[in-house]
Image (tube, rainbow, N blue to C red):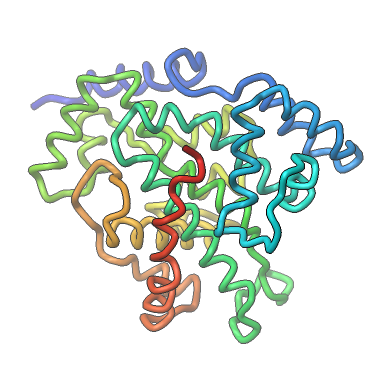
Length: 297
């Protein structure tokens, strides 16, 4: 089949759609305002809390998350302002972003939300373990231990497949064809996307998240979660997301669009300085997270 000209036209059309954001999830104005305010440390928590109370769904999810076993606070939290203080700015950013895409993910593909959320839990847990390991040498250019931002990596992992929403909502027939082909052909989903659309969900997700003005620490790992060596300053974060994605698929949590499971990327082992025993321990530790996938419902 001849794909050349059709694919160029389709690529331009997809990018145009991202810029218009007509058929894909957008950050509601109140959520955008809250996100911007959280960039400024001088704004009082009380003011941010007052803004959040205007979005009942957002307020409810914040309280549900802060009281979930995943965060493990010893006492039940009833105050939204208290929850905001406990979670911190970066977790709140993850929550407001999650709220904006929750419905779109649920409606686009059955199992995509569960896959994405479990991947986010797993990525954050891996980052936490690496940060706590004093003997692990994750060094930056200054020869100091590299500290991974656990909450930013949660956001990046949560959004790593958001490009699939763009394809599902903009080119429904092609999306059905992609999913159908993936079901019967033992090849990676990304290869099928390229064959049909001349682009793939990782690049489209990157373009959308960049359009939302989220930081490069989120959109670059999304763009390169299949091509770790291109991730520049964010190779470690990108490797963590790649590993979290691999483990989520291997455990059969949710559905990412294809039954095909890639082999563990050898670059992940090198970049993170881990071994098979590390991965086995992570699997044992993350498996209970599947019981917490309800927290955004």
